[in-house]
Image 1 (cartoon, rainbow, N blue to C red):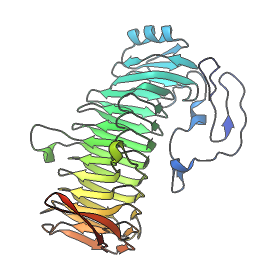
Image 2 (tube, rainbow, N blue to C red; image 1 turned 90 degrees about the vertical axis):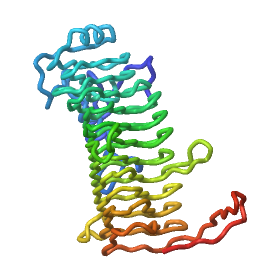
Image 3 (cartoon, rainbow, N blue to C red; image 1 turned 120 degrees about the horizontal axis):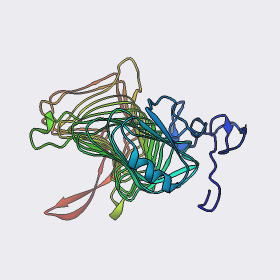
Image 4 (cartoon, rainbow, N blue to C red; image 1 turned 180 degrees about the vertical axis):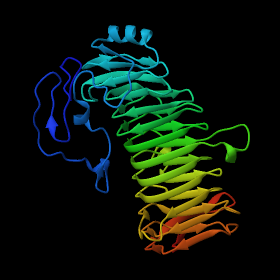
Amino acid sequence: MEGRGTAPVCVGVLAMAVSCGSEPTAAPEPVCPAEQRIGSACVGVPASAMCRDASWTEGVTCSSVVEVGAASELTAALAAAGSGTCITLGPGWYGSAELGAGVALLGRGAGCVHVQGVTMAAGDGSVLRGVALGSGGVVVTGAGPARVEAVRVEGSAVDGVQVADGASVEVVQSEIVGSHRYGLSASGPGETTVRESLITRSGGPGAWLTCETEGDPCQCGGKVVLDTVVVRKNTIVGLELESVEATLDNVDVGDQELGAGYQPGGGVEAIRCARVTAKGLRIHDNTNFGLLLDDSDATLGDSNDPGGVEVRGNSIGVAVMHAKDRHIAFEGADIEDNGGVGLFIQSNASRVMLATSAIRRTRKIGVPVLMGGVSAGKSRLATA
């Protein structure tokens, strides 16, 4: 670990070890931490790709470039920046930054550029890349698109990345770790996209993605895309989808833990007319339910890809609630080794389909039985 009194060092994790301001030296073959693996992919910040020259602006359209090497210089640069301005940060520690619409803040890498927190006004050209963030996290406002890339947010005092009502954001190759409340939160009719990223060890849910409106929530219009994402070791629930249209591809939601008051952590919850399409979805080893579908539509898996959706090793498997007139399809799904209930379908559900799917090895568990609100002991429950 580096301290504030030491020179920051960018460390390459792919092929080279790169010290800020020095020649590259050979590095050992990279090892992907277990919590960042999903299939053959390793999600999170690719540090070596961020440690290039001090004015790393590749892929960003800049009308002007301002190089900054000290906190006082950043304050002045932000005050003068307009849409199209790219501010590049040299190694060091910086306070909070507020970016205007269309402004890019580009660091050399999360291993050597540290910013307390960033607020972004979304718009074409709004980019945050190659930095580590602390207690201030990332807040995205405004209706236009913003991009957060190769960023590590650790120990945010509230949410790691907060997307305000109506804002749209793409989070790519990033890590959101140890947030006090949610790892990622988004509300409103914008579009939230997360690719090749890790959300872990939040004090509350890993991702809370909702579309709130004063009118019919089913017409809110919020969209969510998760592609090659790991959501692991959070509390309450790994992934909450409320009144949004969600597309999940190659997503791992596992090991959600006991929270305050020993509240168990569920895997994926879709509620209030969410519409979920998923393939390559793995929900496993959560301390509460694996998958809860409540008043929502879902198409899960592909009959041509057996095992493409896996719900395994959770305290409870899958529950389908309030599903009258909802369309729910499991294709090529494996629901295995869960406790108590493999698949529960509430009696009013009439459009639930399982094709080329398996429900196996559901474990017996003790279930409290209440009579008049008083415990009458435990029954033994096992359901395929």
